[in-house]
Image (cartoon, rainbow, N blue to C red; front, side, top):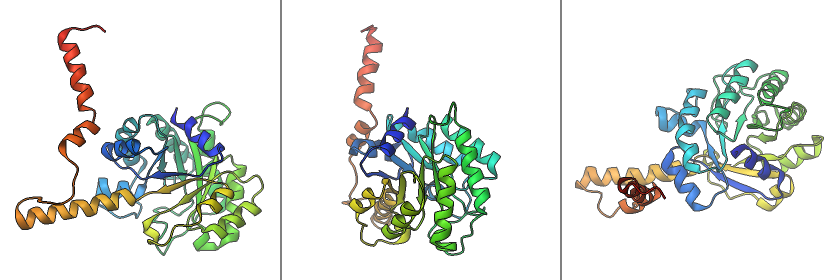
Length: 294
């Protein structure tokens, strides 16, 4: 199960990177590149599926629909998917966890913003009461089978750092840990913030770190320092979409101006069909046509 592979990553000693994917082609490209897991962003799903910014338009059904095409293309690699605010109260959060698990999603992250939420890097965010935030996390943890140590991985995210300060972020992470979260995620944190959280939260779970261009294109943080503090997964939610959008913009501009894509950089058709498995499928087709039982 992809959730078990995700748990192994969280329990391991290494920091790994999950790039963003948003359809079957991007998922196949990520898997071919050798990643150990991938991320599905609500902001990206909103952009690609709805053509709208990250202002709370996406629902669980939108994420599940995308995941149903992404998960098979990842060929068993774990997918960490955005669950935004859980799309309601604790009961809705519980249902969201079950719907994500049924779609084959390995892990989700749930945040404590007021609904409708907004991109974590936009001004004007608000967060819910800490008790309500913890209740939503507990509901997702308890939605899993058995003793809660199997099934979908629950990553509890807080956006309180930029709204209420480090003290509130620490309090919320402590509550999330007590509620059984498998990992915690402090949106907008730097190395120093994470160090303060880890020091203050007893038995702090592994951590997820967000490396998103939505926060700008500054220098990368010290990955070794983050690894030593317990960060096990770094997500790169929008990098691939931004690259694809720039490449597509160049192609459309060339076609509009010259009637042809010309020398714009793009993958060859043969490479794409090979990525999609065409050679193996044609071989299989011939075997079936010949009636070969082997």
